[in-house]
Structure formats: structure tokens, C-alpha cells
Amino acid sequence: GPVEEAIDRIGHVPLPPYIHRSDDPSDRQAYQTVYAKAPGSIAAPTAGFHFTERVFEELGARGVETCEITLHVGLGTFQPVHTERVEDHKMETEQFEISQSAAAAIDRALSGGRRVIAVGTTSVRALEHVALANHGRVVAGRGDTSLFIFPGFKFQVTGALLTNFHLPRSTLLMLVSAFAGREFILRAYRRAVEKRYRFYSYGDCMLIL
Image 1 (cartoon, rainbow, N blue to C red):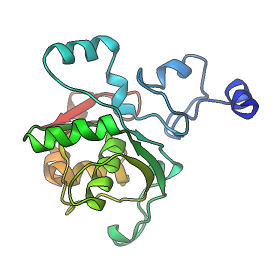
Image 2: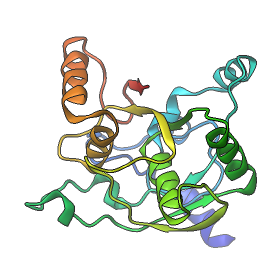
Image 3: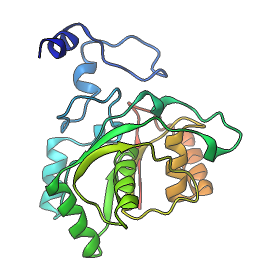
Image 4: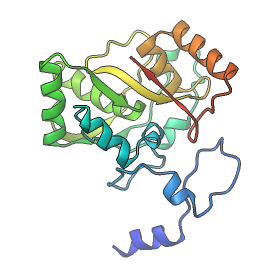
């Protein structure tokens, strides 16, 4: 509609606060995944930046099945944890949607003992929220989630995770630590610093198997 058109015309790309520059026209394409469709997120799922159409073609040629789900990232993704107890931190509610075809593909993989590789922490939160509500199964639908994943969480869907390197004290880093173990992640981050990997949105990624 007219409102959306006006926003698209005069709005700015909402770069994360740790990128200390104004957005420029190139960010409209660079700060976006090749598979983005539904508008609504205030930040890009940056783990997806590492995928191109050619990468998807090569994955398909190797027998890797892919599917897309949606989680609209809110401002809370940049909110550090300030509470004395981690579990007292409140996540902002975010909208998600999982299509019938995506749910069926993920459920087939789980039933067949295959590994589900989540691309990005947003995908993990959507998948694990749905699994918690449906006895470990991924079902189609849309809804809201404020799921906060930190060490001690029991993952039911995610078998591997591709993710960027995150800010200290962030809920994103806590999710990754919950998945792979805090000490393992600290060692990986120290190694990344030694090797001068790039961190955050426009940075490098790690695949945790």
C-alpha cells in the first residue's frame, strides 16, 4: 500500500548500532539475504549473508534439502543482558511463520534421523519454540515467541548451527553457548580473534556440528 511504498522510498536500512556509520545505497542489497521475502524484520538474519544462489545450487547437487522459515527480528535482539540472574532477562516478543512445506521437510528429516542445520539464531528460536509447544514436532503455523535460550536449554530440533560471531553479553552469544558449550565457544572465539576473523553482521561465520 501507499504507507509501505513511502517507507521504502524515504526510509533507511536499519543497520545494527555497532556499525558506526550511516547506511548507504549499497546496504539495501548487501544487508539482505538472497532469499528474503516477507517484510517485517528490523534486522537481517546475518548468517544467511553467506549464501548465494550458486551455493544453494551446489548444496542441492550434493543432496542437501533446504527450506525457509520466517522470524521477524525485533529491537530486543540488540539488547544486552543486564539482569543479575540470566533467567530473569526478558526477551521481546517476535513473530514467526513456518509454512506447511517447511514443517513437512523438517519433520521428515527428524523422523528419518537426519540432521537439521539451522542457519542463524533466529531460525533456532523459531524452530525450538514450535517444538516446545508440540512435543518435539515442527508444525506449520504463525505466532509469537519470546523464547530465551541460554545454557541448560534442551534442543529438540537443531542438530547443527551456522552463525556469525556475536557481541559479548548478548542473548545471541548465550544461545550459541547453550548449543555448543560455553568453554568450547570461548576457545573458538579466542581462535577467531587470533586469526583476525571479522565479527558481527558483515563478518565471518562458524559452523557448529
